[in-house]
Image 1 (tube, rainbow, N blue to C red):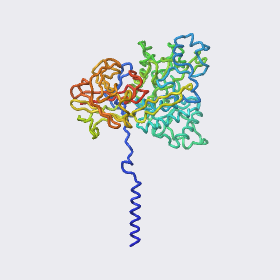
Image 2: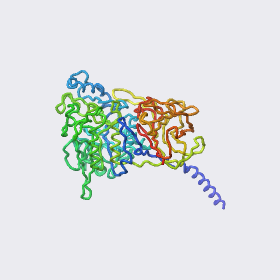
Image 3: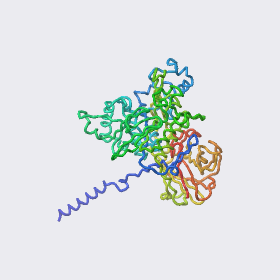
Image 4: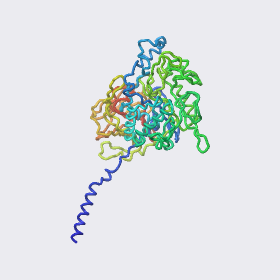
Length: 606
């Protein structure tokens, strides 16, 4: 009996100890990360073009978009090769005697890289995680499924950048960003180089499953553009031979070697790569390009060979040159190629490109003296990335519109039933309100990174990390709620938690926004202002708001917004810590904004 009692006591103590180390249900739960549904967002670009939504595109499936991405901007290879600034290159282009003169003092030494423009993030390196995070987000917002690194020269992979991009994209994925997955265009310089690249990639990343959430899987395997032959004596023969999905690539702009060859750029009408399944051919892949360093027949030409020779941004095969004012901003060449690809409706569209930037100078190339083979100026370049030139973000939203037409869009959700919200209540009155507008957390960290030429870039404007928003209404009011990752900073801060509203009821607006809240820091009440045209505002009235930890709620009478009835649409965005009032490009750079750039969330009341 005594032994049984001792056994019972030991059993109870063991049970209590076991229960004490088992996490509670709440502790075991993995928080659900809401992915942003960016194809429901609306936007109007710098040229007044409105991007397509579900009403124009409908829903589609099994479509992929890839983006050519240059990870070669890294320390030890290009950081001291900035050379002549974009301004000098453009000035040189306008002076033929200067850019044909290889000894002109404006030029640096031969075979040095110049930059045809300055991106809005400066002359960054692709080891700058602050920039890489922004790339991950805006490319995800655009609907890009995969970025392909340009590893076409020799067997180089640009290891430092590769590590930085993998890590940054993995972190963004963990933070809820539907990041483009990662792949590679392998060397155009022969099968041996491609084999070396594949062995390196496999041993460094794929074998051990590193950053697996960022791999681009195609036909169930990690995919690369470019194939390599392996024989049994190679170290990783057994592991690699069936590990990757490979597609042969033809680098030429015109003739293509086989019907199944993928392309990275091709003159209009572009080559269609076919694949065969069960004896039947299917359209698999096409390329679209912003511009090309080729003549109108697909022969190689230096980008500065002459405006009547090269396929620049304004040239189309069908209609010749776009002669409108500021034609370079409209992307006629890009449109011709993308429209044709959408008409052909392949499974995969490959876009060239995002951030090449570099314009290497040759004494002679393809018959051009003092030649810049790949890029040269606004007209003769192929980058979509946001620019400090007049191109700004116009090509990005042009691309977004085409991607949506190709891939389709999600349907904008209709708002849940109306509800009176007591913004001062201690209860959570928003629990059953839908939709929830997701925003990306974890992107307000500081910038402190080297750029080209030893320049160091800093940005410490990240403050309130916006994570989600909701909207609802009753018969008289519209209620807005926004949440941040941590408790909100003091309301007296500059440019604090601004709400921008578009109700489409005035041609006097700032970048389509009719109203703004908190342009002036709130006191006991917040101020609602109306645009009188551009970044000029007049007071409409005072409105109620409430701050509770990491949550801000705002109550606006419908009459103040000029809204009548129960059926209406409100587009809106949140911004914190804008630095350059009136410059919408600031939304890509400073503080935090939801959603990004020119995008707006859409609230539909029916």
